[in-house]
Amino acid sequence: MKILFISFDWLGLATPIVEELQAQGHEVTFLDSRDVGHFEYWSNPQRVLNGLSRAFSKQSLKSRHIQWSEKRFLEGFCIGREFDLTIFTDPTDINDKYFEIFRGFSKRMVAVMWDSVGRRPKYLERAEKFDKVFAFDPEDVKQYGYAPITNYIAPSITPFTATRKLSGELFTIFAYDPIRYSFLQKILDTNPMLKQRFMVVFERERNARKATDERIEKQPEPILGNDLYALINNYCAVLDIGYEKQTGLSFRAFECLGHEQKLVTTNHAIKDTPLYSPENIYCLDIDNPVIEPAFFKTPYKKMPAELVEHYQLKNWTHRLLDAS
Image (cartoon, rainbow, N blue to C red; front, side, top):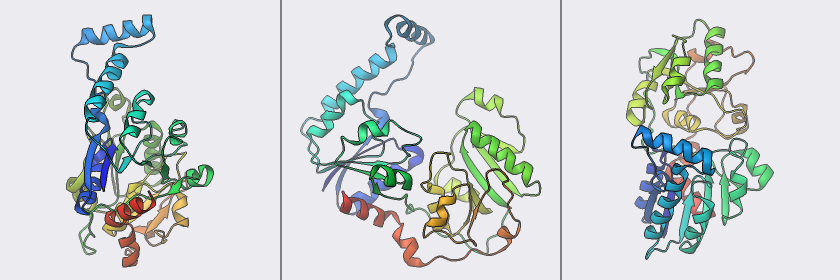
């Protein structure tokens, strides 16, 4: 099958999917959506001109350049191409004006939403343009009739050694968000004896200046792959702080399943899934996030091999293609 996979390769999540599809014998073209209409300022005066254009013509130089760049890129990209299936991981990645260009050389188009409608309401405007929409959030499946899909366990994720020596009880790292940052502080205040390492990635310096809690490490860029696994390997459990308008399971839940590592999460919806066991997963009370110390002292309960196999990426891709 000829497949076009369009995604922003955020934290390297798209690359394993492309590699797995290729390993299964499909002819896959990967288009990183950042490359379509990419724009960077090359001087401070250009930033000033961009502001003036926005103020006087209601359209910035940046938006004009992106529209021109999108059109030029897509017109060249489309020459001589035809795909059996085009997969988007963000329905709003491409400007409406040029979305139909993809329709012209794609027999079928599906969206696999990596976010929820509650957080990205613009998804609803674009969803009707696809032959099928897959949603990882159960609320979106129930309310809008989208096809259900979960996240997956990447091939690079393997079980940690149960007898490994631990540096602490709880680890987390995520990109800065003021609400989640405040909740981290609340966890630390509520659990003063917790042996933890909390890291927050600050892509903008002004946000880093606002964050002054010395108990939380500042990180200038994401830590990925084996470097990340080496860090979380030192802790009994990983902390997952979900978003308010999202009930779908994050990648953290599937990473922990693959690593055979405990999970502390704010997402109580996990209790209704096959992944849940009280020995392995602790659901936090948002208002009073006390973590019982006994949770860290009991061993991880090994989950059935067929359950872990079900969520492996190779089987995830089979389910996606079969349902598309």
